[in-house]
Length: 124
Image (cartoon, rainbow, N blue to C red; front, side, top):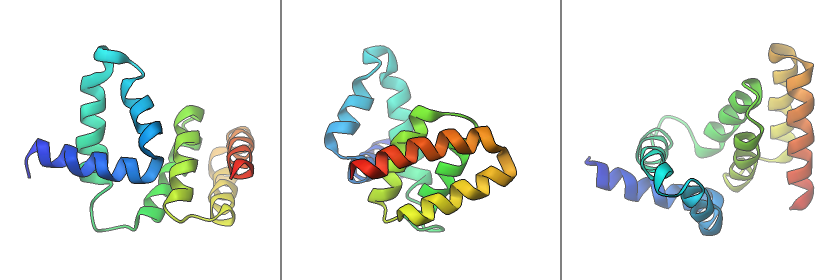
Protein backbone atom coordinates (compact mmCIF):
# COMPACT_ATOMS: atom_id res chain seq x y z
CA UNK A 1 0.00 0.00 0.00
CA UNK A 2 1.37 3.40 -0.90
CA UNK A 3 1.47 6.46 1.36
CA UNK A 4 -1.49 8.11 -0.39
CA UNK A 5 -3.69 5.09 0.38
CA UNK A 6 -2.47 5.03 3.98
CA UNK A 7 -3.32 8.74 4.34
CA UNK A 8 -6.81 8.23 2.90
CA UNK A 9 -7.50 5.26 5.18
CA UNK A 10 -6.00 7.06 8.17
CA UNK A 11 -7.99 10.25 7.63
CA UNK A 12 -11.21 8.25 7.34
CA UNK A 13 -10.52 6.38 10.59
CA UNK A 14 -9.34 9.45 12.51
CA UNK A 15 -12.43 11.38 11.41
CA UNK A 16 -14.69 8.49 12.46
CA UNK A 17 -13.07 8.42 15.91
CA UNK A 18 -12.83 12.13 16.65
CA UNK A 19 -15.16 13.92 14.24
CA UNK A 20 -14.34 16.14 11.27
CA UNK A 21 -14.14 19.36 13.28
CA UNK A 22 -11.68 17.97 15.85
CA UNK A 23 -9.50 16.41 13.15
CA UNK A 24 -9.40 19.65 11.17
CA UNK A 25 -8.42 21.59 14.30
CA UNK A 26 -5.66 19.11 15.21
CA UNK A 27 -4.33 18.98 11.66
CA UNK A 28 -4.09 22.76 11.37
CA UNK A 29 -3.00 23.55 14.95
CA UNK A 30 0.67 23.97 14.04
CA UNK A 31 0.04 25.40 10.57
CA UNK A 32 2.38 24.63 7.70
CA UNK A 33 5.15 23.82 10.18
CA UNK A 34 3.13 20.92 11.62
CA UNK A 35 1.77 19.60 8.32
CA UNK A 36 4.51 16.97 7.82
CA UNK A 37 3.92 15.62 11.35
CA UNK A 38 0.18 15.41 10.69
CA UNK A 39 0.88 13.52 7.45
CA UNK A 40 2.95 10.99 9.41
CA UNK A 41 0.26 10.64 12.09
CA UNK A 42 -2.52 10.19 9.53
CA UNK A 43 -0.63 7.71 7.34
CA UNK A 44 1.25 5.62 9.86
CA UNK A 45 -0.57 5.90 13.19
CA UNK A 46 -4.13 5.77 11.84
CA UNK A 47 -3.70 4.43 8.30
CA UNK A 48 -1.36 1.62 9.34
CA UNK A 49 -1.16 0.77 13.06
CA UNK A 50 -4.73 1.69 14.07
CA UNK A 51 -6.05 -0.10 10.96
CA UNK A 52 -4.36 -3.43 11.59
CA UNK A 53 -6.69 -6.41 12.11
CA UNK A 54 -5.08 -7.78 15.30
CA UNK A 55 -7.08 -5.73 17.84
CA UNK A 56 -10.51 -4.17 17.83
CA UNK A 57 -10.56 -0.34 17.84
CA UNK A 58 -11.98 -0.29 21.37
CA UNK A 59 -9.10 -2.39 22.65
CA UNK A 60 -6.56 -0.16 20.89
CA UNK A 61 -8.21 2.88 22.45
CA UNK A 62 -8.02 1.40 25.95
CA UNK A 63 -4.36 0.54 25.47
CA UNK A 64 -3.59 4.08 24.28
CA UNK A 65 -5.42 5.55 27.29
CA UNK A 66 -3.19 3.57 29.63
CA UNK A 67 -0.07 4.65 27.78
CA UNK A 68 -0.99 8.34 27.59
CA UNK A 69 -1.87 8.43 31.28
CA UNK A 70 1.30 6.53 32.22
CA UNK A 71 3.58 8.96 30.39
CA UNK A 72 1.62 11.99 31.64
CA UNK A 73 0.31 13.35 28.34
CA UNK A 74 -2.99 14.96 29.44
CA UNK A 75 -3.77 16.61 26.09
CA UNK A 76 -3.39 13.33 24.19
CA UNK A 77 -5.19 11.47 26.98
CA UNK A 78 -8.17 13.83 26.62
CA UNK A 79 -8.31 13.31 22.87
CA UNK A 80 -8.15 9.55 23.28
CA UNK A 81 -10.85 9.39 25.97
CA UNK A 82 -13.17 10.85 23.34
CA UNK A 83 -11.85 8.38 20.78
CA UNK A 84 -12.29 5.45 23.16
CA UNK A 85 -15.90 6.40 23.78
CA UNK A 86 -16.46 6.73 20.02
CA UNK A 87 -14.87 3.29 19.56
CA UNK A 88 -17.36 1.73 21.96
CA UNK A 89 -15.45 1.76 25.26
CA UNK A 90 -17.70 2.29 28.23
CA UNK A 91 -16.99 4.58 31.17
CA UNK A 92 -16.65 1.44 33.32
CA UNK A 93 -13.99 0.00 30.99
CA UNK A 94 -12.10 3.28 30.99
CA UNK A 95 -12.23 3.33 34.79
CA UNK A 96 -10.87 -0.24 34.96
CA UNK A 97 -7.90 0.75 32.77
CA UNK A 98 -7.24 3.70 35.06
CA UNK A 99 -7.42 1.51 38.17
CA UNK A 100 -4.80 -0.78 36.61
CA UNK A 101 -2.75 2.34 35.95
CA UNK A 102 -2.91 3.19 39.65
CA UNK A 103 -1.18 -0.04 40.61
CA UNK A 104 1.46 -0.04 37.90
CA UNK A 105 2.17 3.67 37.32
CA UNK A 106 1.22 5.38 40.54
CA UNK A 107 -1.48 7.39 42.21
CA UNK A 108 -0.54 10.83 40.80
CA UNK A 109 -0.87 9.59 37.21
CA UNK A 110 -4.15 7.88 38.04
CA UNK A 111 -5.57 10.94 39.81
CA UNK A 112 -4.95 13.16 36.79
CA UNK A 113 -6.30 10.58 34.37
CA UNK A 114 -9.44 9.96 36.46
CA UNK A 115 -10.14 13.69 36.68
CA UNK A 116 -9.78 14.22 32.92
CA UNK A 117 -11.81 11.14 32.02
CA UNK A 118 -14.60 12.05 34.45
CA UNK A 119 -14.85 15.56 32.98
CA UNK A 120 -15.13 14.22 29.42
CA UNK A 121 -17.58 11.46 30.34
CA UNK A 122 -19.78 13.97 32.18
CA UNK A 123 -19.94 16.13 29.03
CA UNK A 124 -21.52 13.31 27.03
